[in-house]
Image 1 (cartoon, rainbow, N blue to C red):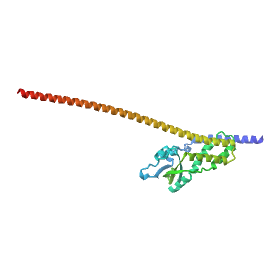
Image 2: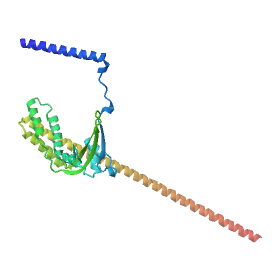
Image 3: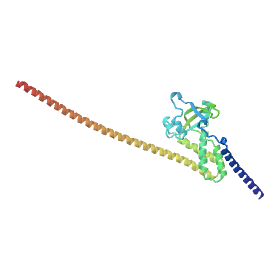
Image 4: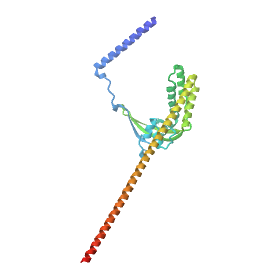
Length: 299
């Protein structure tokens, strides 16, 4: 009882001191404008400028649209521009280094780690939800963190580097480094195999309960179903777009045929009108000749 009383008194003293300190600080700032925290200005942020990049001399921009979209998780622009089959899964690795070669090597080497981290996030985020056993969740986290993604069946599509110059807002000193993006693609089957192997390794990497293993297995099915649904939705969308395009082309073709038929009818009508004018002109000419003959006879 004495310990509790002592702890309670100490806690009350600490809280009172904190309250007093907070009040005293507020009063001091209000009374002394010099102590006001200066507002952060935009020019106090480090300035980052891309000073060189892949194919700059050939007119390439420093941040192509396909690269921007790819970093946001959308690979469609890249697939279209680089003629990559739409069914393939496209991922990228990113790294920085003091030289282009270093950043490129790190980008390639770190690609497997990047994919493992992505799968790790999915495992912890999906399977970890609803777990009541903290020890079990910790075991799952350790297993997922230590499991490496064995990247096989990859095809390196391209790479893109940027030379970045950073100016420190406070010291005004500049530093330069290279950023390298390596883009890989893999078949959907390879991606499924990667996910399956990763999740199986997680299940075998720690003493996890059967419930957790079932959840991990369900996660793979969920991931696969989501991918299949997205693929089916994309195919349905592409089919709808194709049908709409064909309908538009058919409508345009029908309109062109109607316009051609109308033009032909107008041409035929113009021809008939020209023939009528020619006949009238011939008749008038003949009448004039007959009148001239009659006039010469009477004279």
